[in-house]
Image 1 (cartoon, rainbow, N blue to C red):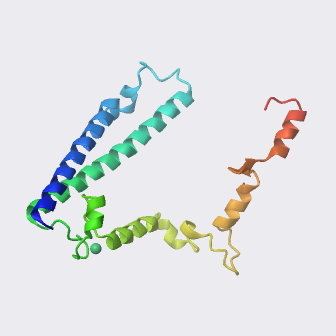
Image 2: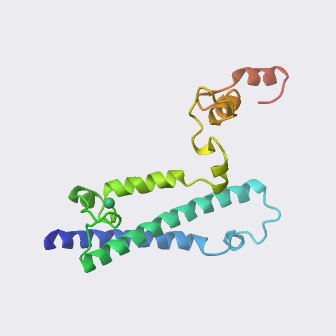
Image 3: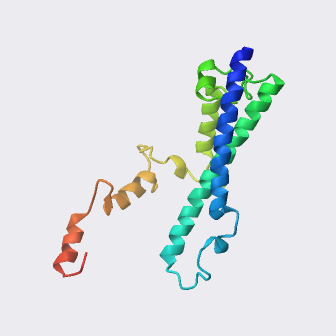
Length: 185
Ligand SMILES: [Zn+2]
């Protein structure tokens, strides 16, 4: 990559870094680094409805996920910047082949070529709990509908719960029955 292009990438990376640092600071300011108990505005959580704590927990774990992702991106940017300094920028860390300029233009912090990036993502998908290695077929991919499959697999599990309603619609028959009995529904 030419010097001029590299300078452009440094500029983009630095700008992105500043933006992400602001996001990071904002998340921390929301009380993430304090223990959860202190993050509650009330003095005691004892008389709180569990749902209140629940949604606060939910918001908090969402924020934590966001913070994780932000820090991950910041780490990538840091590594890309040091690769530029060392002269290894644009070379895939995994296979050593050049990363396409189109990819670098779209994602200046890319450290892997698109092929290696995809391999990494597939690995992530395979990253299932270790005990599942003893299961056949593994829970991760049981929608195989194999001809001789007699085990209760993912597909059977889906069928078992599907009759209670899906996002395509709830089971209206059940609701009607409740209504007839005079239950508020
Ligand atoms: Zn590669």
